Image (tube, rainbow, N blue to C red; front, side, top):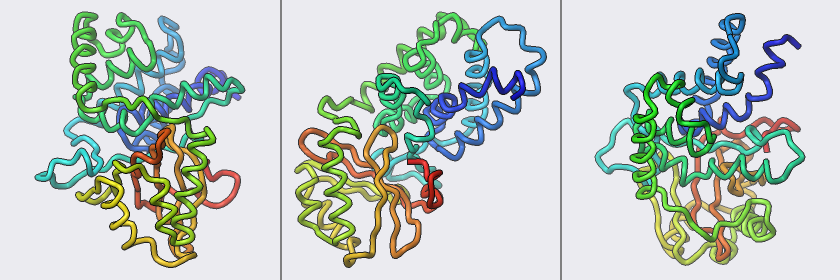
Length: 301
């Protein structure tokens, strides 16, 4: 392993999480991380150590994300979509396995995922890119304001102002639920099992038991979404098919229980479940076969 690899590889997973928070797309985040490492490799001989390697990489990655976001619309979920919007770019999920630290410390693993929950990622998309960067660098990564100012070629006063505005906006568009349960908890596992059983056995009653009365369901790629258990079940009845049509592999994504989903034997996409103490509060479905990894140990979940 080269000195460059030794110095930079430990940060690859957290940089992917960072770029995903900025961009709302797993695929774009992976591309920007590759670009970050290429830029870092090209300039590594000139790295003078004025900051840590980690902060240096975050500076490169953040500015690469800002370049990627120039002139771009925010990524959407159906529930955040302006009805007049055209040429929509949709939010994508991120499997936890891609960004979970290679650590034996459960607290480190949990902390690394909390800032990837779908409601937060969707809320971040409402912020102008530089405000988004400041909020993530300061609030998620706890990088000092003076360092953030250097990373973004601005002043500390501008960083503090941007952070204040970003917090205010995020409080409006991404309120935090206080009854979420960890995806590895017995309650979340039970709800995921009931959801999977409902689809695989074409059992609407299992889905009814799993959903909260105020549950919502949205399918990325569609401008329509559904609110309330009865309305969700009416829609689910039209797609549930017959036993065996659907097969699901349990996983976790965005710090939520999730499934890799197959329809009639073919990769179909992912479903991400927002689970609470009282049931599934939200089903967010992503019908994109490229999100389903190949069979085998490298399936990412």
